Image (tube, rainbow, N blue to C red; front, side, top):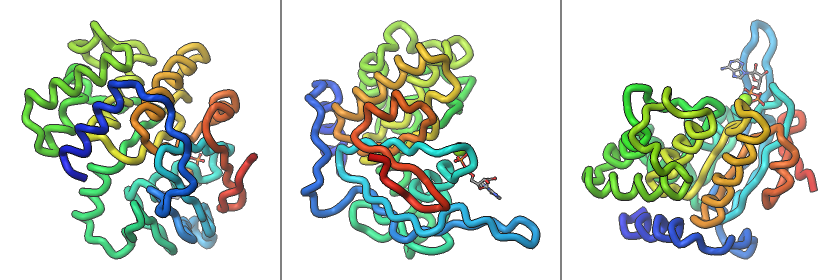
Length: 252
Ligand code: ADP
Ligand code: MG
């Protein structure tokens, strides 16, 4: 992804463009899980957590992944985000197979193309909100001033004006999660993977964070998979899927 491309993407975020429709007519899904299997050994037994996952995610599309605890949501997101290798099958990013890539290539794709949000914010406690968002950009090679400008814009877009210099411990749960969202999209990824991002928040705060997240997803044209137990939030996404016996089923 070129720098010009990612800057353009950030400008789209700022302009708050209307939601792009999920573009089913696009030739290539931005993320495609093909016949993905993931199993864990448990003593004598093998636990087939993912058992032939087929999932295509299109540019600009937001998908809710709704399934009970232990169904394999986190495992699916880890495999989709190239944090874990599948035991079978392949993960395509922008039509490109990742199965045969070297680890450094997988890391590069993960850094540039994929953003993660977890249930717990995992912000660095000794850094300010602003620095937490700047860091991934600087790791990627952006100069400090540029990273700062973009981070300020992003944090303000997410309603964190006046909180930039606060450390995570000085922020509310909802604010921490919004900083984590800003950090996840700081490098203008194509794909956002969120693992129960509002699971640790009260209903009111969850609603606030979800709204900020969806607005950002829509405005930036990001494709997103959000694991959630909250059916009200899931209902407002483009598409809902569940995991049954290690396979993806559409819920609509
Ligand atoms: P969910 O996120 O839907 O709650 P997970 O993907 O975390 O589900 O876990 C799915 C199943 O796989 C669970 O039964 C869990 O105990 C098991 N599991 C997850 N990670 C591992 C691991 N590293 N080793 C063994 N079993 C695991
Ligand atoms: Mg989980």
